[in-house]
Image 1 (cartoon, rainbow, N blue to C red):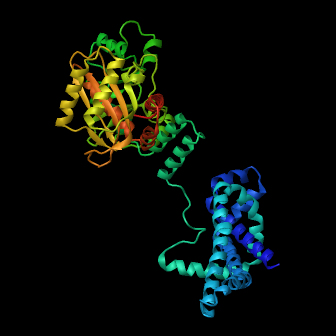
Image 2: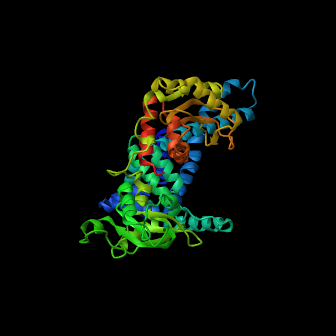
Image 3: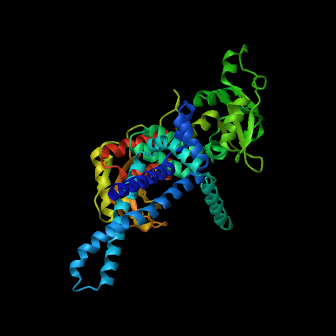
Length: 500
């Protein structure tokens, strides 16, 4: 009879622990979704979570009562059994020692059983089935809390009084909102478990970064603005249109700082003008903004005003760039190319052939890793002069270490006569000690070779690599890949979808 009652108490203890940890782990957003679908159990869970401190107090009252009952009922019987077993040592041990040993053994035995069956097992179950446990146990818990209303209120008031001097909040008022960094980690874990496509994860990463992006980060800089000028002959303006093939062009009195609006290509094509068009008559108002304007605001104000292009000015009022809605949306969906946009070398698939990727670089010195990547490039591009390439890269590496931090090394060199840019990517299976500014061991190597005749190409590629490796989610995934194919596919997907 005592044994059955003890088992019942331990089972009740396990049920309360199971429910308590389930309430701590259950996702409120998921419960709210079920409640919106009309689930009465989910509504009950919401009620419990809304007054979580009261319901936890109810369970704690019961757990305290169970602990007292176990000590009062089970411990004497266990102690008597152990004392009888230890009595055979009465010749050696005095009665007081036998009583002390039997008491200690009884407490240890009960504590071990309770820890295993009423603590560890329920916690493990709650971690795996938090939602199910919460949905099943919410209603009984509400009834229990109602029955113990008076002691719960006393316990709740006492806990609030103890927390208040330290500026701490009760469980109900504590902040349960997931932060942005935590959300990134949770989404990354969801993708690794196959619940979220990689492409969608990168789009969400862009959305997170979009909140802090400014117009100056997405605009086309001043030196790349194609505009029409009233002081130029029509043939020169027409040459600009034929060369750039844009839809909209800023219209200026002289240079870009004297902009008076913009000209739409449709107005030129559909106009009834014979001969040279009157650009001033075709002028439309051009929306203007400042460098510090958040893109989040522009993505609303520009469509509201029917503006697809904006002139961006710096703090002094000087034109610093031009911004289109396409530029804004590229910060979310990645690069957008139309029929007239030439793809960048980085994304045309020529730089990321399988032979130019090594997902398992062996441990060793930095020179050996660079030489291995040069060999990979040589296998993919037989026209490459491998000794000259390694010599140029290693000479620069010894003079200026290319560790850029965050576990990334970017050795690079410009080679005369190189037919085009070449890139090899390597990943250390184990972190390689480095002398990087931040002290983070090297995990990734981006080897970049570009033609000496085109220095701008190298700058563009290095800038793109920098924008990719600053993404923590991408770095973490690159560190974890195991095969060349996975590394290559991950880089291609990231470069397509992650905003520059």
